[in-house]
Length: 152
Image (cartoon, rainbow, N blue to C red):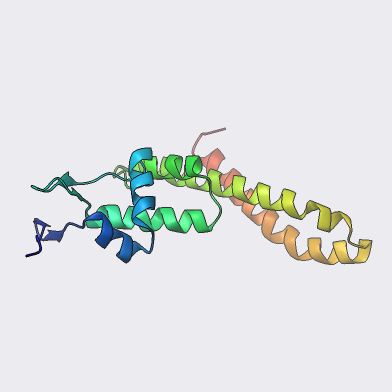
């Protein structure tokens, strides 16, 4: 007979169940648990670790960030602010995620710099023509936000 775990209407998952739903191996869940990226909600009478729907959402977020090539340290920093309720913390969390994303973009730019340096002047001009307006608008928006918030 299979144990059914519920907690105030929420289903709790054992590692095997969580891994199937999230599309990761049980070993990955063990690893993320040992790193403190996720944690069990509680343990069952048979000492199984039980994970909540909130943990499932967090695990899916980790998988998404890993697919976007974020390091586990970057993910941990991002998740530490993810889910905090108060507005200042929410904004701080969003800014941290934005910073992580900008660092990822910097790595991607460094990776394509050799390709860009080999472009002919006309080709490079066409590439930058499409890129520069969006980049400038993004930087300007960030500066406005930072100045408006009294951060600078």
